[in-house]
Length: 267
Image (cartoon, rainbow, N blue to C red; front, side, top):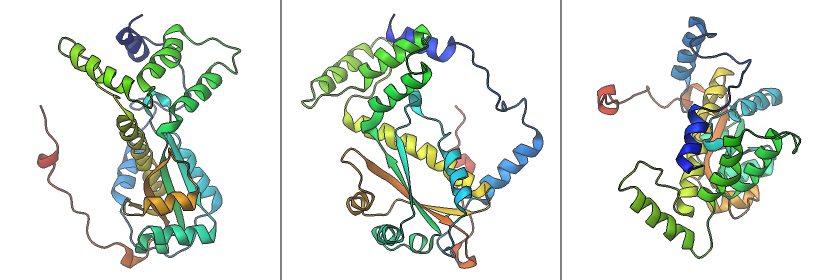
């Protein structure tokens, strides 16, 4: 079975799964849409908080929502560090360049990309889906997770596979539509950070839905942050997230967006 046939079966002809969760457009009423739009509009980046931590169960609920974020091939190459130790939290705030949002946050989170865990997570997923090897996967799913993903994601220390992929994608792409990456570890890093960014949006909307505020921060000393969190070499901090109750002066100005015509294009 060719790779594109496998992808087609996975996306269009896979087994039908039932889910008790609401289906958009069917089980969700107008009130839900109105609430969602209110949450989207209410989410603002707050720079000064009152320093009071969220209730533990509330933060756990928010993080549970975050883990439901979409993920490419469901490999979930992310980790979320809830920094609760006072000394580590203070050090992390300093590593965030002393930003007011970090220093005054009730809670501080680190959103970490783990491109190095793609294979570990793949094997965990297979174990879950097969109930520890007791059940069989549908053939397309089995081929996808056991053959296609390793073929796409594997790299070697000397870059031979990277060069081979680059040539292969360029040549085959002359005559057919195909995926052009990943070609190297750099592509894997971009892929992992993209997954974390998707999770970050879920995180911020869940925080707003629970009645609290947040501030995503890209300005930090990553080397020091990795030491504070004791992260392994393959881990990279995508962003830091300040969470808490806003103070009035924490909202620095009105929400300003470019005209939709500048950013939304109908083609």
